[in-house]
Length: 258
Image (cartoon, rainbow, N blue to C red):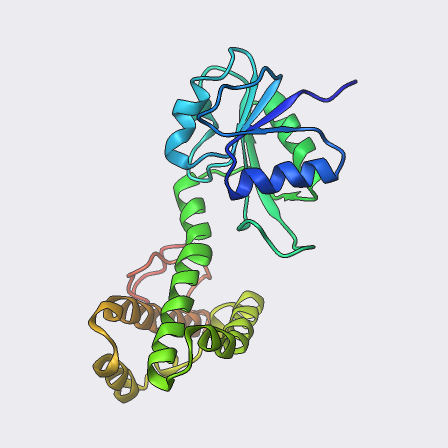
């Protein structure tokens, strides 16, 4: 049986990357800009920005299978047609050979197509999403937010040492990479620095030196590291049950996972 004729709508980084990857895997797909007239097809994969998904979906032929890759949106944004979300937890373009986990949920017919495409792309489905806002926020924290912190650190390092921003990024890369690897492997036990140690004098010196614009980020990170370290210590002592504690909760209070 011939696979459904597929049109990828949205010629940005994701759409361009998946169209090329599908072609390399022997799966034909037509790539088009979301403002262009839509070619006739059996299925459409919308790789447009989140706020353009609903309007783009409204232009699709009735009855066509529709997929979108907006991590913040549920399948129902695609309207009254077989629809599913196929969202990769990856930035594009990505390193060659990188493992790409993805989430898939929606109408069974559309889910079957999404799973077939994910397999063709070498992606691994980790299942559906029950809380889409929290899921997408988690992805944004480790992507956009983490990237912004690294860039701010590089600029601060450049200012403090006189090296170029490019060299600052290169110089900080081993520290950033090693820290990320340790945290991913062991969780909050890997957290280090003055906030983890309770070194108030150093924290105050940092605050005095930092540009005003970076203080909210630094203060939020300091408070969160302090909380996670205290929470981990309680877990280790058997006081907590190990459940997720909302940001800002009192680590010495009752266990909200009980």
